[in-house]
Length: 401
Ligand code: AMP
Image 1: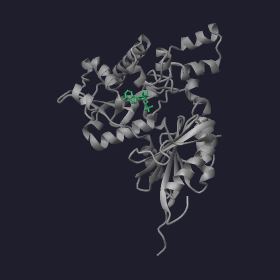
Image 2: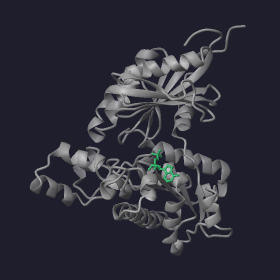
Image 3: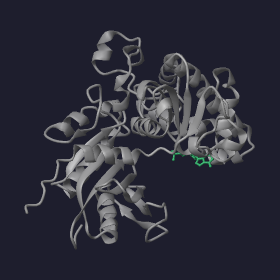
Image 4: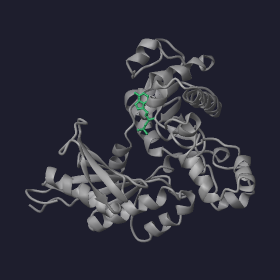
């Protein structure tokens, strides 16, 4: 970006299979803009928003062909450059789904980092290659900027062995077949928000329910993850928009041997055609299911709620008790129905939701004096990436007098 006195800025990128989410931050971590390029690989659209959430020009989005992530990034940068001509991007922070067993914190991308992250692609074949495509596009756009990788798995590397392993022969653990857990950037944000706004609770035992199109839950003790509902892949645990959640591995064997399905067909079924969409036969969108009165929609919601309750009981056991519950993600932050339904079955654990507080969307949902503090906290993965990126940026030399 050009013109005027350069103002240092940080870019965050979250590259999905056909989308690119981005955020532009000042050096002091103020949000300048956030945006999304959708449907990369065809006729897609770019949407840009100001820090207030208000759409930026053009409000209806920019529609054009985006051949690949590099093309999407180039268009996003051109739009940002027109809006913020003085801004000079000094560092780019990337969301990377998998850091493998070795990474428990963000890293600066240098030397053979990209090759080592590419070697983890078999662990996350639907996400990792796209994350790396985003990094390559950013390196060619900003060859001099620091590039930082922030891993969704890193926050969970503190799990004790019993929550890190499967009961398979040890050789598989050594090869990296482990319970990694994901949504780590979201959980890190919630842990930091608790430490700032609820310090006593942050020192206790808290279950965080990240309920969005992807959904998982995490048990925090003193702000550190001790267990998560997701495991080796982002398929395990809760049912999601289109993912199945917990599944008996015998089902996969049956699909292979009796339904003649190969790995690609099973992958498509479990990642894209299951969950709320598969059960309801209507949609992966919770709002649509809540509005529908079909038995499929009702049963999909019932199953979603029941699995959250089951996992809450399991995670409370991992924590040996419970002091707090935090709801976040699109459903957790907005769905009064799901929060109320989950709490209805969890009174025995001390989890109660006050109807008026729930209707007001919190932030405190539990009634006065309840044994478990129930909160809703809007999560913010982008700011976690921006913070980590600033922390790892090489310090700028002061200008000579
Ligand atoms: P996310 O992936 O975090 O953006 O969350 C997306 C999910 O949140 C979708 O299933 C939406 O239907 C759901 N969602 C967003 N707003 C609401 C709402 N007001 N009530 C129920 N679900 C909602």
